[in-house]
Picture 1 (cartoon, rainbow over the protein chains, first blue to last red):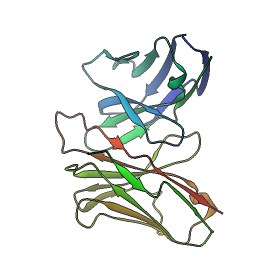
Picture 2 (tube, each protein chain N blue to C red; picture 1 turned 120 degrees about the vertical axis):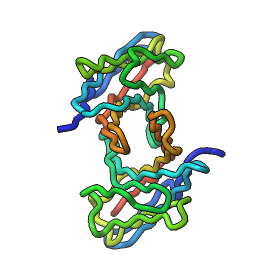
Picture 3 (cartoon, helix red, strand yellow; picture 1 turned 90 degrees about the horizontal axis):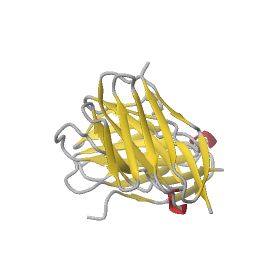
Length: 111
Length: 116
């Protein structure tokens, strides 16, 4: 069964600290994996997209990793800011137009 | 282009009423998707259009739900005889013609539906 699981479900960190969010998937055949940031009451916004051959991709303070062998991805946030408080969603797609969404990790950054 | 837009942003209705939402995708994006998202969950796929053709529908899309994209540009999602369980955020996303296999989706801000 194609599934995307994210952990932790929620996370609270102090401003300035780093954190890492996890995504494990069983989706096959794999096409690409995206991390989205979703602010409360808004639509998701893409942070990174990774294909099978990519291991690491950075977007500012966000760094995503992908291990296609173990079917795991992580999103590392460096020097967190209050504006990083949001839900982070991992989405895995197969060839064509099938998208599998994780339930997200809710991140709260406190001063 | 200002991205994917959705209208209205919020809708409160009484149970049993019909509601219609609109999505305007990014220009020249030929693919359009509708999702439903409840609190604390990821988006759930509802339906997908390529140009004006509705190519895929989820089993979540009951007979009370209908979506159209008559001219291959904007799309509407109608819910008939709304139920309290329909309360959710309805998200629209669009994608350009496939290029390089990345198949990226651009999401709108969503329409928050509350059924009383």
